[in-house]
Each structure stands twice: as C-alpha cells, then as structure tokens.
Image 1 (spheres, rainbow, N blue to C red):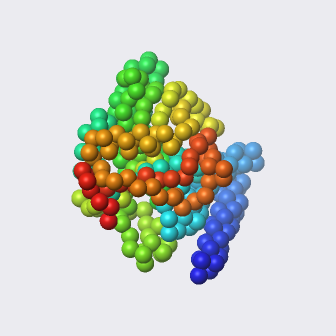
Image 2: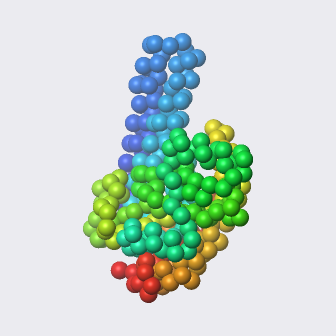
Image 3: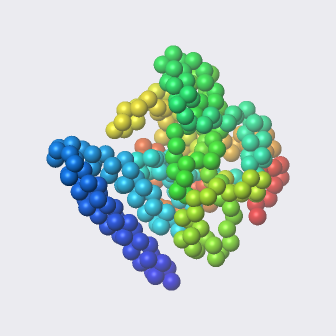
Length: 277
C-alpha cells in the first residue's frame, strides 16, 4: 500500500512538472513571442515562470509529497524552503491569543503597503515597531493565519516571532486523502484546532536573496527558539504537557536553508494542565 501511494505521489509530481513546462513554453512564451521582440519575450517568460508558475508548482508538488504528515518546513513565495516547522498548539484562536498575551507577545500587523512602509522606516531609523508585519510564508497551500512576536531590547531588527497555520484535527481516513492536504480553506472561528507553527528569532538587518528587499536576518538555531517559546508558555501555565513528535519530511543532515534543526515538533494543548486529544 505504501509503495502504491508513493507511486501515485511521484506520478502527480511528474504531472505537475510536465504541465508547468508546457505552460511556460507553449503558452507564456508563445504568447510573448508573437507580440514582443525575442529578448523581451524571453525576459517576460522568465518573470512569469520564476515568480508565478514555478513557485505555485513547487507548492503543489510539496503538498502531494507531504500526505499523511506535518511538513518539516514552510515555503517562501518563490517556492523555496523557508522556516522549519517546530511547534504545534491545540485549542481555539482565542486561547492561542490569550496564551501569547500572557507571556507579553503581541499579534503582528497584517502585511500591506502602510505596514511595509512603517517597517522600512523603523528599520532605517532604528525605531521600535512592536507589531511589525511578517512576510508571507506558505504551509498547507496558504499563507500564515496569525503570527506573534516579542521585540528584543525594543529594536525593530531583533525579535522572537512565530507564524501559525490552523488545521482541523483530521481522522485517519481524512488524513490519507489528497483532498485534506490540498484544502486551502481557513478553518471556522471558535473551533478547537491544531495551530502548526514555525518559530524563529530575528537577529538584525538583512536582504532577501534575488530581490534584495529589506528584511530580517534570522538565527540559524530554530531548536533554541522552539524551546524558548514553549518554555515561556509552560512557565506561564498557558499549556499542558509538552510532547515531541517528528515532522514528516526528512531533512538532509538536519540542515534546511541556513537553519539547523533536529526535526522535532514540540506539541501541547492550550490551557493550564490541558491534555492533547
């Protein structure tokens, strides 16, 4: 059965790759080549392929390859691996917000033009911005649902932060179906959910690869940040017993991007003495 599922996954991933190549060559380039000089047509095709088609294809392929388990990493907008998944909390959204408020963390502003401009000003002038927005990372086919942070020394460049993606607790039949993992709908308000998180610590000023946008540089040790977050929640009696589970995807030599991770996900239920279902 496992071999059959793996074969179907590989066929699906191959199909996504084939469709992507066909779309780039025979649709995008063909359209551009008929209307633009060759050099401009190639540049246009590259832009659409690199920033639209291929990132979407990578995210789709990852979802097929991640059936039946929590992925090990989030994905950036360019389709490349980003922050490791390293913790998960179970409870309602209100319980999640109350837990982080209790340890002095604040919810991040939504990413938009106004918040982006304010963040750039804070970076350049080194002014505090405790609710600075997060860039969008993808898990389960969508950007984060909510994020929390705590500034370090009131600096806009240094902070503890974590992104969360909500998932309804599935039964065994659901978790084995591609439909569950390909569902991008946000779960309903008020439901008890699994909040799958990726926590990292920002350490200063940096530039993104390729686009050179202003961003945060991050500490490579995500294990330490995971333990820090869960330790603060436990000390404040915001969670029950912490258990450790393995993320589903193996990471070569425990390295991902520039991060070092042991691949463990710390899991707990929200609430003093709460028990995981």
